[in-house]
Length: 281
Image (cartoon, rainbow, N blue to C red; front, top):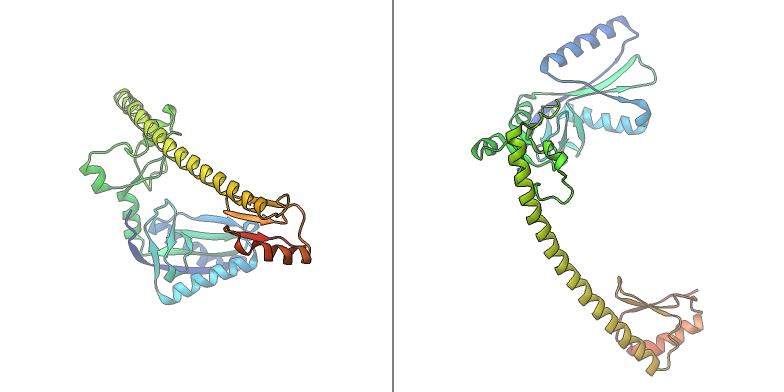
């Protein structure tokens, strides 16, 4: 999905509601935020340290002073957003409040100017299985009700087909059960795509296996030639091993080399045709 930057506002607050006036202000603010349509996410003090929370809130305050919070829309969630690098690459909630051990302290922040963000959630649909996004225009143009991208998944089972129903991002209700017509059509398409998917995966496995076998053969040939070189040059190879994942021979892997052994090997291995290292004491 295209990443569009949406500029919105963000507001920080802190109250000590043990004070009557502070409590009134806090309750009035909560009513104001709810009127915007925001829902509060509460984060318990056990899940953060004072230092980490302060550093995070300092960034929120900085964005508030700038008068702008830049929201990325590559990923759209039901209650939170990713901010751009200009806004510190933070994950911010629509409305977030810290729940401290001292419950009289209310500290949090909330987004303002959220009309465009709310509209994005309203106009973006998501597969409940693979998470693919569909815009309203795509969904209506292709007359899509169910995701058409993951029916061939090797992990998708028939009892999870209900999750393919596309739902708006702001729809947090239960998935609507499949009616008989949808179930028959979806199940039939599922079996067709599973055959195609299994065939494609098998072909890829064969290709990968051939590559692995070819690589193993080349590694074995290199190891053979290297040890033959050591034998022909009268080098004790008992303390040498070939690490094919590094494509490197290691001398001293079993018993670390002494200084004298290291110097002798350096001289002997001047013409060794492969990459190697010496493991010393």
